[in-house]
Length: 233
Image (cartoon, rainbow, N blue to C red; front, top):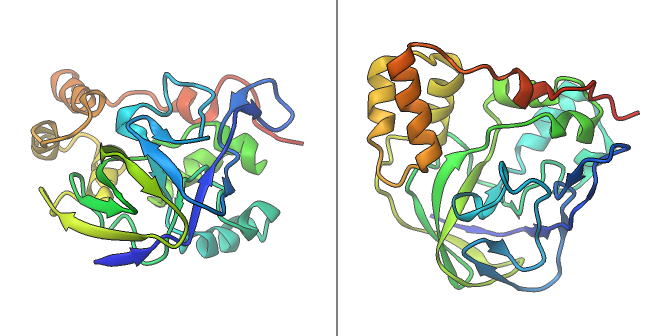
């Protein structure tokens, strides 16, 4: 598998919409190569380092094909006219959640990256799009995108190749993980298998173990809707 990186995107921290909330979700394409380090791309930033960024979420990939589905669902909004609407760093056609799996290793430019987890959408998407339940829509749709950790640092630029090097657990696609997290969240056999996945971020391992021990699904309300109405205005 070898795909072309159509757009490489980064963004600085700035107020989100008409709120005071700092966010780095507003990503824009760059023209040339950037250094990719263990914490992410040169010039990229996150407003909330507790929930965004870090070694296990160094790079965010969102399939460009999803934009057409979103235009059909929420209308032809200006945000959907170009890549970056979902805060992604990589915009590539030809790879989606059903095809990519936890632990897949890719060469990206001169760097090497590994798939770690799907995105858990948060309420900032509601403000970003001016749609009160946008984060919930993303979660329900399964069109979440995914994250990479960086195995080898290097230079990455638009037009570079994303080339599959290795697969550790190809049966554990991002789509399968999404189904377990949000569709059949108390499938105990699947949760046990998830907790044993090699390379899974520790926070996700703890999530699986907590569901197994409590037999309860965590409350998603604050993540999906925040504490105030999300209308952007």
